[in-house]
Length: 103
Image 1 (tube, rainbow, N blue to C red):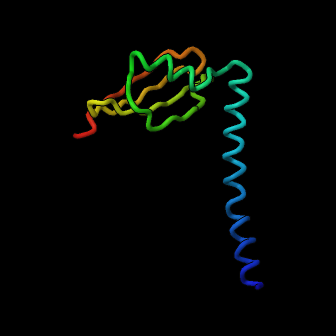
Image 2: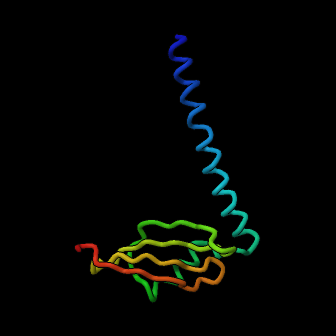
């Protein structure tokens, strides 16, 4: 019983800092949206769908040079993998890199 308790306690202590960090990232992103610094992701994706159709694979929200940037990776129907950097406040594509995923 003591071994199990120590194991559970150790597992909790190891994972706790990671959980707190993840929550703080989510909280910062939520606050940025609430304060109007960032457009909600759904609006960004709707705005992009016309010019950049494809399946979204991954999205990250990062702070770069005092600007919020969505990094969006997506795969087109023709197999082209595209990484977009989008100004999170305006929805304007800042940078684009594409490559054929079959290469």
